[in-house]
Image (cartoon, rainbow over all chains, first blue to last red; front, side, top):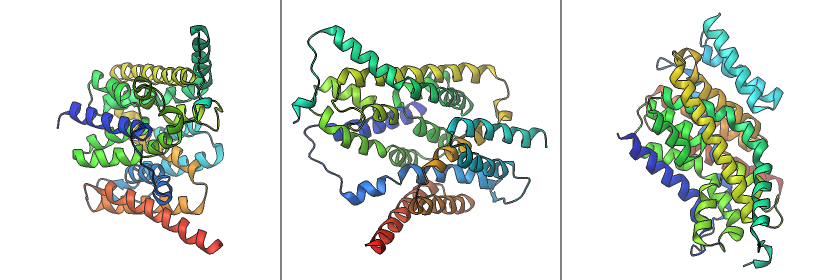
Length: 104
Length: 241
């Protein structure tokens, strides 16, 4: 698949999502339920992308200590809960992943 | 329309001042995303995009989470329809932002609607929404939006350059970086039980889909999780009445 086709299609989609509903000719109003459902979109999608990276190793659900992704993932969760600082969480989380991968 | 709320300037000095004020307001948010921009640039190279395509991700899509999701999905060889629906789900919050900004931006001329629409990120919304900015000012919004756009794209460029010169990016565990980034973004947003239900549903269903080799797993798990969170919120709200 041509990467430019993907890029331009996604760009048009993202732009549309930002632009369309501000157009004066559009009388659209999202129902309260739809708005409420949309508030769950970011956590739902981001989690559904991240979880398989953390839990699946070589096609198998891997819940063991030698799954560095899982251990480092748990560390990231703890960091996120304690530091409340996204940047700090990612930097320390990556460091712990690298230590697990290359040192231990 | 509420014409009274729209600031009108007669001389260009005042426009410039408002523009710079908007830029200044978004500077802290821009600094905070610079590392993400660098990461996004180097991840794009790592995912097999060439430098121009990598820059175009930031230059024409200009949406960090969508960019990261595309890279992840292209790496695993997902079909275009899955990419589009995932992008639509991730970007759907912008529908809410534009709904909120509608009363301020819809009276503007088309070139302003196109420009501010393109620049309407989480960060621009954060500084220019009606709660923050009592009297909407198009020059203020333009200054903030362009400043953020410039910062994001320069950071991406830095990441592209670094990604090309660092030899074994794989050993740096950048696939884990996507997971770490998303976890770090999601955890602070879990502010109530319905969001927890949503996140746990997404976690369990996405892992099951992946283990079962379901290609469009995201299209199953993400909507299920959104509905689960919504259903939980509905049921518990009714219980409180």
